[in-house]
Length: 87
Picture 1: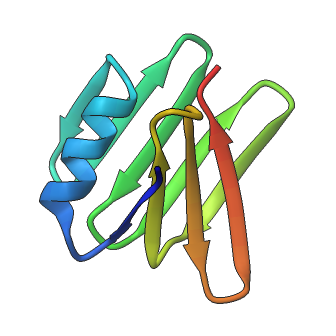
Picture 2 (picture 1 turned 30 degrees about the horizontal axis):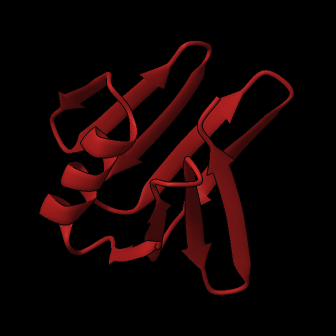
């Protein structure tokens, strides 16, 4: 089951990202998750950078959809969807 979290719910974003990745650092208004060569960064203003070898994402999000069972985070913004899969 997927959980949709609006960027405005920072505590839920942080809780879900810590559940998603074992290594999450907090820097000011930013969370950085590292999973081997992959990384996922979200800031309080909704700016997301995510990537791993061969692909990446750099843009804004209105909400993140965490699918812990599938190991994926879907970034949602009007007209844009990007899926980050845990390696």
